[in-house]
Image 1 (cartoon, one colour):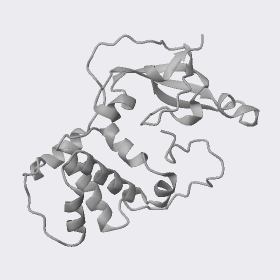
Image 2 (spheres, helix red, strand yellow; image 1 turned 120 degrees about the horizontal axis):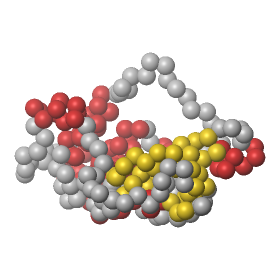
Image 3 (cartoon, helix red, strand yellow; image 1 turned 90 degrees about the vertical axis):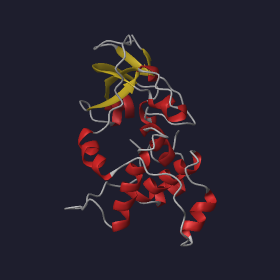
Length: 221
């Protein structure tokens, strides 16, 4: 969707301020939110693209007024409700300080945490899929403004670039975020000139690389 999270290339947002020696967490509750997100993910009721969609599919005013981990917490609560792991009544009761009886044992055990973090996760799909494009091909990003999740940034839609690398086959986030349909396809590193994206006022020799899926692209040859 064209939400406030997709602000690449926008004017008027000011400089990106970097905090020197920034800690991993600014408050203890932030670490708890991160832990809850990983622990609840072990239920396997959602995937990484559903998580991103839950964080991003909010009104711009809410998104911009939340801190990073407030956004994580909102996304987690949204998914817990959508997947019926908790009810609104249970959330309200817990917020009021009431004790909620446990009905299921959590799937994530302490001994599973370190190996899981070390192993990480990948959206790569081990499936033979024919690539639509080759390195060197000229491609155009389809100008499609989805109301659901997409990994095609707004500022590249309708623009022409060149395939410079085929990363292989991965789940397609635009469908995986909706119903878990991985729709495996190739992902490419696509190079755009900044003048293609922002016109003659951009630097003459600068380029930008964006990872895009087959379904985001059409031939411009």
